[in-house]
Length: 189
Image (tube, rainbow, N blue to C red; front, side, top):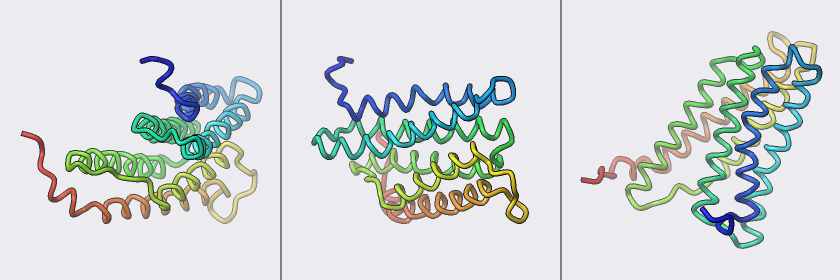
């Protein structure tokens, strides 16, 4: 691919993809390298912020494209799933919360594919933006973890379960919106 095919928003999405393994490695090094978890958290915040800026810039610069939409959604899914897996590995996130969030991402990804077979496109919804924000906030606080529990859970754990609920609602909204299209879609011969 030519470098001219990539716009500034595309580069931001690619940067987010590149940061995922770095965040994962730093998260795993949290017990052996001083401040590794803090660096991972800072990089995660930077990566999450690029998600908001790439879409804004694409619209403002009028450079929205199929490639950009693909890079943006792929980068988001990689950032969330990669970071969740790293946080599960250091016991900062419940495996069940991570599995539910990842299952929603796979369901919506499959839904996008089925809808595309029917010649349509799944456009982002407000629920998708709320879901992304809830996940980013919950993951960010999972890195920080306040020392005091609020009842049976830490503050970040309450946020993560709230993000799970928003994630389920977002996934349900996509499925409900496109259910008739999915049922009517036939596989290519």
